[in-house]
Length: 119
Image (tube, rainbow, N blue to C red; front, side, top):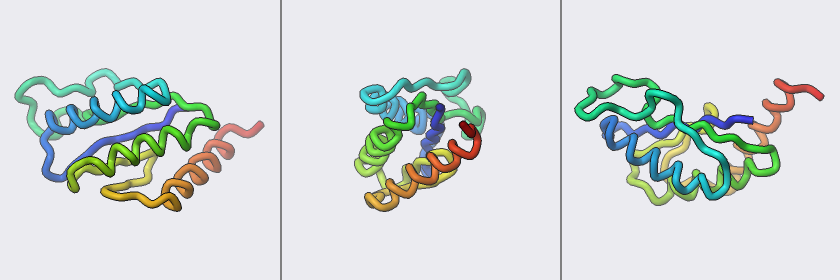
């Protein structure tokens, strides 16, 4: 399975988003295989929005490890400036995220995967 995590921030330029996503990727590598799609790194001097995939991480995850990946991502988010946001497969988070929010995200994701890939 692949989990898409997008790093954004209203006051961050593309280079800052790229740096933040590299830092997140570094932390996620402890719990999962993480890649960035081609074109996800801005060229020096790139204008905002020049590359739509800046800040996008593709995380290969087994159902049993989704909670660990989400915990790592949300733990990283709690340590970031207030304008950093994470979009984890369509669920947007910024700042502190409660354990209940994290559990709901994991449950929703697993339900969707089960519907998309019936046994």
